Length: 82
Image 1 (cartoon, rainbow, N blue to C red):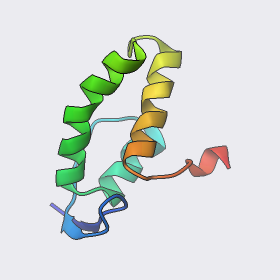
Image 2: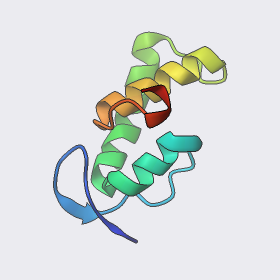
Image 3: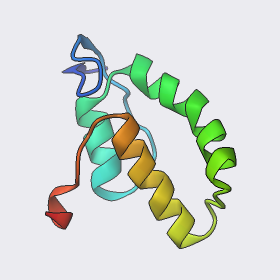
């Protein structure tokens, strides 16, 4: 597994690896997020879904979840939206 300088914690650690998310979000996570921060997001994600009442099967809710994922992992706005 590749070593990355994590965008969230700033430490040089083992990367998150293949995360299975589409497009630039998945690519950004795989290239810029460490495995520890990714695990932390996965455990936090359920609370976020419940807090906002998100239904990930619905496109608008999934987009909101992806936005919250970017915020949590401190990835910023994707280049396609700038």
